[in-house]
Image (tube, rainbow, N blue to C red; front, side, top):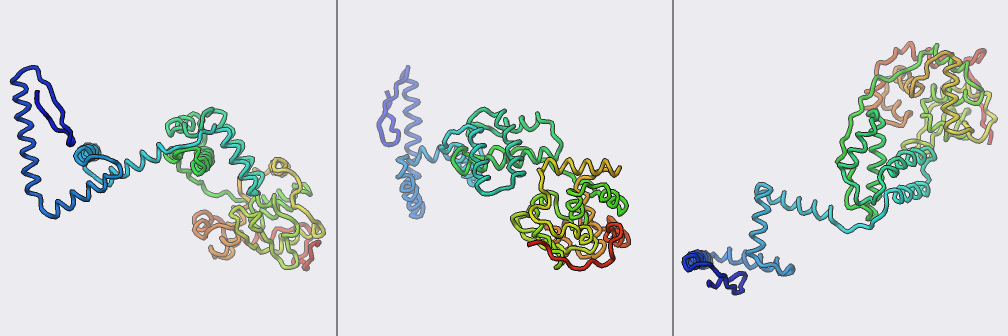
Amino acid sequence: MVANYVEGKRRFDSYATEAEALDAAGRLVRRLSGRQVVAASLTNEQAVEYSAAVQALAPFNLPLSTTASTVAACLELVGGDLPSLHAAAKFYAARHKQTTRKPVAEVVSELLTVKEARRCSPRYLSDLQSRLGHFAVDFKKDCCDVTTAQAQAWFDALNLSPQSYKNYRTVAHLLFEFARARGYAAYNPITDVEKLKVRAGEAEVYTPAEIRKLLAAAAPSFLPCLAIGAFAGVRSAEIERLEWSDIHLAERHIVVGKDKAKTASRRIIPLHENLAAWLAPHAAQSGMVWHDTHNAFSVAKRNTARAACVKWKKNALRHSYASYRFAQTTDAGRVAGELGNSAAIVHRHYRELVRSADADSWFAVKPEGAAVNILPMKTAQ
């Protein structure tokens, strides 16, 4: 039997034979002797470091030798890089922090309630409800139990276009950021879900002849919306929120308030002479410019294109305005301010798509019989 001291406590180890006991005793003597030599040769600085280490571990009631051995083993796993060991510990702590269990469907419902209270647009709420509702149906579990691998497999199985994939990923990431902030999830599993790069094709525009056909075919209720999109570059979603009081015929500008703008930033768009001519017959109107639903707006687009025998091109009204306006002014910053985006975007997507002569033709498209100069009119109060 050999007496062994572990962390200051005596422990007796038993061995089958005397030879094994003598061998173990020899190893122990050598180890103790070595430690004593090291202890005896400690410099004052090393002694201070030892004392500081013991004090640092005191709140955890951990012995220095065991802690040092454990840290050394962990360092071996991370290639001896101490910052990596610290990062790994933080990662572990984040993944294992205490959470409140709540089913995905309930968190989706709570998120929608919060967004509605913050007066998000009905269209945005509808999009969230549709995409996140789909996610909740397939993930009948608590938010804290959803893993990145499960989410990635779900996205892969949807077989979406790159743009749709990106849209779904965006709202799913929003959901788990909401859950994480409220303690329903320890981390956001969507953060590490693969990102797809959406390659934007060349912006499609209408020719002056095509826009004239579309305007001629548009129903009276849709014609102002079509004209505002073509000759002011206002986004479709913004047009649906626009009111007649935002259109100032006399002052020759349109105000897209921050409550109506996609970017939540107010902007003023010049009201060109040809647009004023198209809107003049509606000068006495009040209320919403488009008084029907979002679905009816989409139907009106399709019906107009079909009646005009002109293909409806996605976002082409806005693209057309941006392209012709840039060709007309050659001022990317000015056009960007009217569009509500950046000069870099204008340069990237709309530079040299059309000629300046085409721009003159575009902004000359007016109703049959319209005068060259439209007298200022006052909108109804």
